[in-house]
View 1 (cartoon, helix red, strand yellow):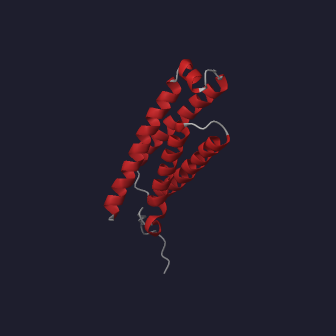
View 2: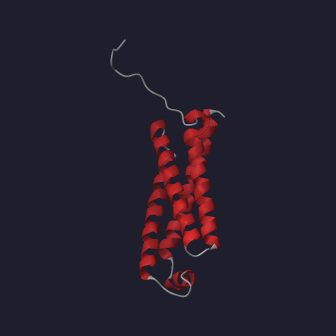
View 3: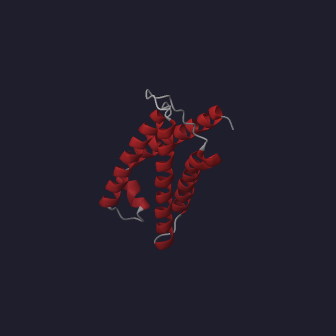
Length: 147
């Protein structure tokens, strides 16, 4: 895979993640009390609703950042973004799976875990695929005169 095609694929992943994050963030912020009551098995929990709204704010921020990261040419920075998202999505997937196996068993947990694990694997493949060389780093000569 050429550098240009891997760059384009990573930019597409950033764009997908950004759009999904923005949509989820908006939906989480706008979630009505009635929906939260239905998701809570007929009981409304204000703390859970506020937690969802706060998570929605984080998703909006991540979406905004990821949308703009696509324009960044610094390979080291792009690698670190992939590392951070790999760990972030992996930890979220583990949290959802823990909830699935220790509390209520729901289809939404399975879907969330699969989506989060898929995103984690995608970011991991860019960061560590081909020995970590899918994200090119170009170093400019420095002004030092070391021989």
